[in-house]
Length: 438
Image (cartoon, rainbow, N blue to C red; front, side):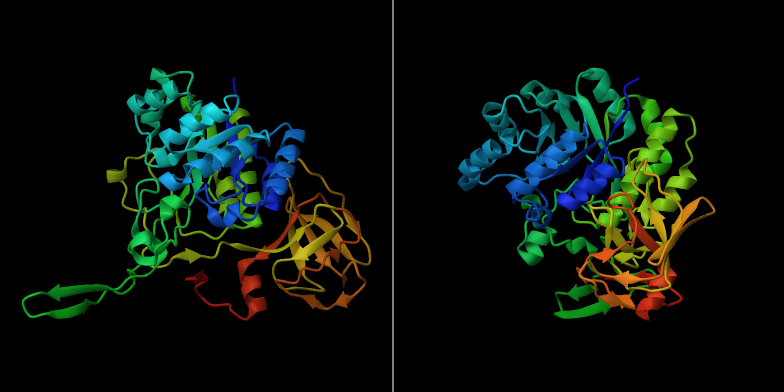
């Protein structure tokens, strides 16, 4: 039986390495505005992206390059140059959306497989066959597709790989076919510069043209005015159904602009869900517990299992985003000997240790701290905070870029976290309702 691929976002080199260490089989990212994530693309340059590809290949894993925006006529030569440059890095596939770019990529780099972006909105076997005949190896199905339609496509074109999203932000429009941001902010979503206008609160007005009067409509209390804010996709409780279908080749996590903590925890949760399915130990509660530690807009299982018209719980009207159950306190560096603060941390704090997939640690205690195991989880009590330069602190705050000595070794990119109530209390922000609207 061929095991399904787990594909995670790589917004920069650090996030790429975290995704790979936390269980991803492949990652996707880009280096320029030809990707749909301009901000994350700028966090890579050609040298760091090459380093990431080499790192992934050293682990026997893959990197897919995003070139999935839609070109203007004036940019065609720039696309040709960019594809040629990216081909020299030897990635494992190009992710593209435009039929013209599919043809261009096949001409410039015929040995690099083509994956069709979700932006192409493939929903049926007819469209899938057109792209397959053009040389596309894999389609990244529209988020609105059903598993039944995926089965129909695979039955019609068995050689065509199918990739589906299982976690992350959902678009208010049809797989990104949105111009609200362009209308209001002059930033074009399909060019990679979406301002996320659908996440804003809106006031609703009624205008009478006969009297030229305008009235603000009061919203029902508790309903909220985030009228276009889609909840985040979360399919962890349906991985068994998806894999049992036998037609899905890759499960994709959205989130190139999200935090290293999100990348690590979400990747690890789905890695375990996949592994547990194949060993008949599948337990959705375990994965959901971890996924709920991350910030989210509320969760929905979206449309893969249920049709859109059957769903009435896919929007979050009363907030744009909310805290998860946990907050990352620190991230262990690539050397495994230091950590950097992500949230105010003080001597005497006890933080939970979240390990990369397959990593093991020893219980230890010295002048710097103590590692202990309680209820099948590892905890680190901090006794001493000393930077590599020898400066000591009682507390260290978020944004401080100093490397802090662990005093022992932990696996690279180990996450240190605490409960959200403790994190808010440290900030003096603890409230009865821990939702936020930032």
